[in-house]
Image 1 (cartoon, helix red, strand yellow):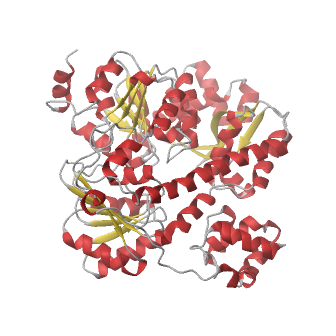
Image 2 (cartoon, rainbow, N blue to C red):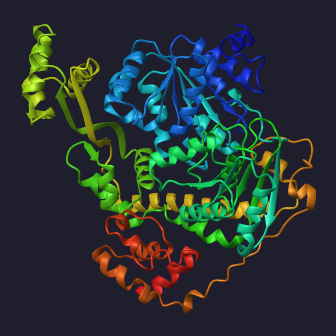
Image 3 (cartoon, helix red, strand yellow):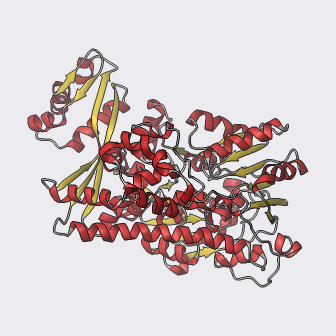
Length: 640
């Protein structure tokens, strides 16, 4: 097969970028493969071209909607039949996409990993023919990666369940350890890993040591050097994003803030304004940037320290994708170290919460454990991501295994007359559809389905009912809605020591916590080093380098730097923590614990804080600049 000819035919390109042809050749030979390319160097083409050459559909799993949107726009601009499934779609569009996928009309379908658990989607997926499963941001499957997503650990199971023959892993930021880990989980041979390296000679990397007092002015000066250059400024906290954007606006800069606390439509509007060059500067938390394919970003500035070298590398990789010179600045002082560390501590669940979940497993009657995540996070007071990780750990230890996700409530309304619907079917199918209608609780417009009653009267299983409902929905005979997702797990083993098991799992969380804390300190040590930044970054991502100097980083140009701590904190032993905690202890009542009080003082998220509106209290986050360990020591003294 002449791949260059096919490349020209489908996309109009005259040649491949480094590594692309090698990966595509492996895919066309029937192998699974991994592509580890620098950000912006064309990883997506490694599946986009094969999607046109393989017999059946390519299924792409992406962690964020923005990843899908830009790739989808590119494919459609080249007349390739590609779609994505997400909650923003109308019923008509969603139904049409699923029908096209089942009929073989689509070449590329993009989804989030969570959609695999959706029983409505699974019923359709069983009828789709898929040649290739693509996992974008594949480092998310590794617990040693910087963006570990526990749901990714179930992808190997999904590949087997839906009999997808080949896998392609795509990432820009995988150390050797992470690369081997993600490939082993999906049976990708080490011989089929294509790593083109990290180094990009068009990125000038600078580290600027400063104090907090001149940080904002330094930022303004950097932006004013190139007043019309598209720029991303990364910060740690949402309120910092808002304050810095406001400061820039007051100084004549066309800037806007962006963070996860904003409404979805507002975030999308800001992103679109930046993509269309209507906003010059985005001041953002790490919620912004993944999958943003803006080729002309000329500057990426870290106003605060990033959380790891992997995060830093991914974020500066968004600059200069057009190959032109671009600047990357790190405004460095150590004042935000405690805040970064505290974020890490906030994701470690309490030992008691782990024990409470294990108690549910042991005490559950029957073989199935049903989890309503939105209720369980409140009951156990564990944030959603650590809860997902906890459930994955229980699966790894073979205490439970995920079965499927179903919706607790199905409701529908007639779009055509009921008798007209029934008359559309032969006698056997008419009787079955009629039983669904008869075993529903009908209100003025909407009817709620009683699955148990249907099964009792017809003897048919839930899957058959869902398939019938989806068919009626597709044919616009009814409008179907589903809500209240319930995750179902099979209990494999109840014969374990709750205390020992909880201690073991808690230690896993603590170990990951300590690893992430160490990553922060490794990052400081890295940037205070006396060797070329560009080539040490390349070495970190397993790229062998011939030269020890790039000639265009701050170490090569002006030598190493030393960070300083400029914000002197009052000695914690001099603070009156008892009075700070008086009000919150009353509100927490029987839920109060050392852990909860520490999270309150350090401003760490906790589900119960939202429920009880604790974040509105006067002293919430009053010690966010202090180390969690120091605050914990002091709270323990008071508590005892």
